[in-house]
Image 1: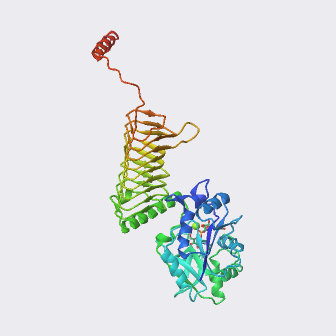
Image 2: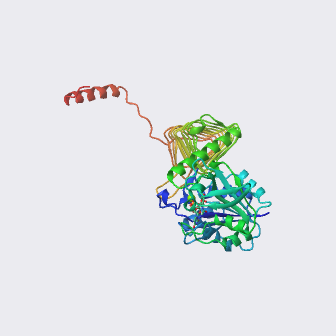
Image 3: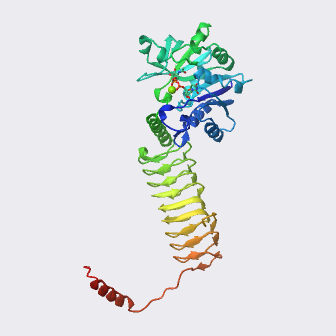
Length: 450
Ligand code: UD1
Ligand code: MG
């Protein structure tokens, strides 16, 4: 059976207290909506429709970035969850499979749970995802009779007795496309909030003699985000899970709770991550690498056997080949470092290509920016860049070449050459002692105490 995904994301999210639409607030450096889409992708959907309203343009752009094939439809006024699903009707025209409805602010439903819902569709017209709530609060309550879900009652409309029920509605629902829209057509806004409730389709289906059931999942999967506090809690949940996944894959995290990961971080087995390392988006680290403490990585690739940090910063476009060494207080940006090359101390290497087995001395800087444009630096193989060399790009240093410490290199250096670009040294015999005496006399005259 083919599946289509409908993600409701039109709400404002007033409690976020933000100018940004709620669903674009990020968890692990991706909008929460993208996490919801990722969750739904477990069902390999044939179509994905996102229902947006508040901040429509921004939501549409974010969706396009993650899944250009997804459709974003406008729900101009938010008249309830059934009204929202109805906004996806045209986008689903001609689709004859099952539709799963997810909420953009409920991003952690697991693949396993979604597959259990699909399995429960056999023999049921509608399947709802519920959970036992520790604190049922204002969630809709699932009223069961045995395995049959009879009705969902919203908190605002529930009797005191119904409010004692702790089996709650997550909002996730599954039904065939035809059945879903047929049932939605019968929904009326006759309730405390005068809204079209999607939850009402359960009672309507039962009244028509259709079978409805609920599948239960752990409460952590249905974590809804309505405030900054919820967002912080969701981040913690994501991080804890992502760290556990890495440990299971054979990555060593010396102090897991101090390592921050992104939604797309990939790390190979037998890599060791020391404490306090930050992985921004777009990082892949191969097997057998070592990322030392307090390093910050984003948009980069680290090949096997490389050692990075402590206190290294790898910015977007960094490509470290095998067995490289990037040491403390080194920043690399948009640069390829060849196999076995070392940049061990206090350097900036940006917009550069470094060959194999080269050594970049402490304090070296590629001066890549002239105030208007960026320029490239090329360094060859087996080359030695002396400490505190300024490489004024565009410039190249050949294979087996050297630069003298403190050089300001403005012209290309041929293969095998030694480039010296600094003032010649002059020694004046005895002058240091004389100068000391002069300075001491000067100080005494000023009446200063040494
Ligand atoms: C809803 C459920 C409730 C469930 C709870 C779980 C209904 C009537 N109630 O209540 O049973 O326990 O979620 O969190 O379905 N949205 C739109 N357009 C609208 C209305 C909502 O896109 O017109 C989106 C919101 O952006 C949000 C989701 O639908 O992502 C849920 O809406 P919300 O207003 O939060 O519903 P709840 O009152 O929490
Ligand atoms: Mg809600």
